[in-house]
Length: 428
Image (tube, rainbow, N blue to C red):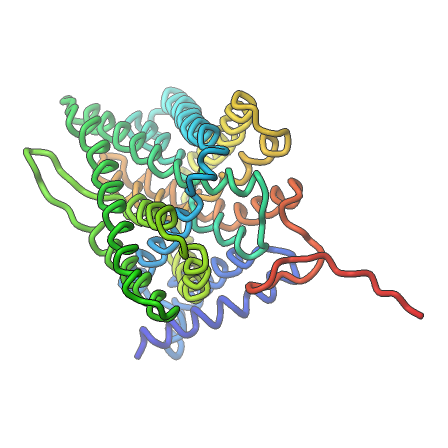
């Protein structure tokens, strides 16, 4: 009963909050996150009043499967952007920018936090500093996709953004695995090349292979059905299947093998959309089905944000350094790589700002980083930064897309119809 009531308040509360956000000219995703904060265990949930909200962090964690499924559908949708025609047009730019901005961000945050360590070793260890540097590379695809969907953003910047966000996940995975391996080696005194180099590459290869097979099988199964509703059901079933399979882990030849949920589902969507001639219409129907799921995902994400980190001056100081230099890294890294690849002035100027949102992937990395001696500092700094980026990032993304002319601010924004400017009223 409590779970159903909490989910009901999450869904309805998030949607009601979005009406207020619209009056304040803020993206709906920001409203969902704020609704989650209010319903979470550090606000209304702490009052334990009439089962409203989430009374403890564990209650939010128990619903993690909803977040995993939502991330699966988000990745599946982004995979739809990797159409061959699109890749021929801007694939080289997307790959170059995706890799360059992530590596530059990691390097810049590493330098800043390691310098902070030498200024005051009590603030942060070197192993924690280089781990945070790698986490800084990660960008949240969910918030970006929601802003693009809500405002029907379309144009060169939007197309490149979705490709870069997708590539960013693979690059971030490699950077984090390598940096975390080095951090563990610094603490233990033993370097494992398997952990630093082999396992992250194996994870990427296995994820792409599983996703590719799933995309091909999905297409073959869809061909047996002609009803739109049945094809939609098959698509939903396959995304649930790939999310479940991506959670598997096993050992092979002394190598720990696992999968990246985002890469698996992204590859499933990519293969499916490139070999299926009715994929575009079907993906549109999937988008409509997932709308309530995404609202729940962001409300639960907001409920997970730990407001207690704001009471720790150490976390605030390290977090402020992390946020400033990560933001600089994303902007300057995107700016420089866009210049080098010949992107338009509009893309060069605005892409970096749209890469600021950070959430689920970074939190997952921070959870792994808790194995470090200073892992609690890493986790709390990431929690603080996610709190800031998730509340501010979507609004900045919206402003950048408006400035680039890819969101029409006039007229009605509707989930079903294209956003068009209002026609002038003629009297007489």
